[in-house]
Image 1 (cartoon, rainbow, N blue to C red):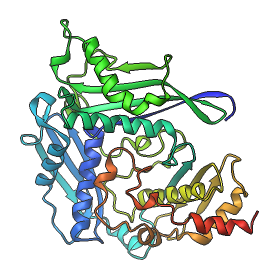
Image 2 (cartoon, helix red, strand yellow):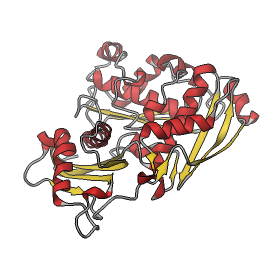
Image 3 (cartoon, rainbow, N blue to C red):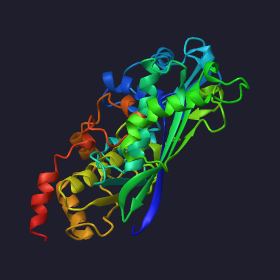
Length: 387
């Protein structure tokens, strides 16, 4: 885009009710994969005041102690005290898991996709992570909230939090931060005498301790800070909002900077292409950027249930590529195995890695195989003959 414009992305912390559900669903998946790498998992979680419901379809040769697993995840997040509105020790847990449909299984067993759908991948060169700057900063803010809470740097913080960052761009390049939004659950000790809002001192402490270490180099005297803008955030977590698996799909991906394919990730084993093929799409896009074949790369894959190869591949580089977008598509076809089995093998997806993905975004984190740039040199060399 030309001229001046603003892009905003949000993130939510590990104690947000939807993210609690994502972590539980992926913890169930990880537990299955530890003992049964071929297990089939489609696990959904619902959480509300005092209650967790775990359901879905799972076919496996192993056993998962859902009660113990859920309580462990909740305790690790920090829901260990009634002052935060939810307690891992005393909450009710309902297990309503059933087996996978044999009609789906017969297509997947033959190597086909576990569902139809479209999957989106993206990468750009505006950050070291090859991700859009607003979502990178939004994730880092909520990670910082968790850090200062668990280290008791700000001991009054609770597990629930959200962030939002608005970045000003000029001709496609980030220039400065226009606004920073933080919503941090807290105890009553930082309320003022009216008990309706936090004290000015607490507000400044949150900005100084959480925001500034993350965004300090890009803010100026015009940057706006919004901290707990209703006044206070004492009642949070599942006590204030019902949570469900898969409701933060834009937070999980690119922060709204590009489109989303539609499928959620958490709780799904890698035969479900709405998860694994989206990881592959990110891998492809990142390697194209790392090969310096484009400055921005958006890729769409589509699949049909029971069939191994994608129905379509589309690439859009917004005019930033050194070769045509169609030539890039041909490079992808020749250098990436886009069948479900090929994706699972190349990205090594049948391992218990998924609970770590369930908070702070699935992309832009070097710990995961789909973030590697192992194909960049190959793509760069192959593209030479096309220029």
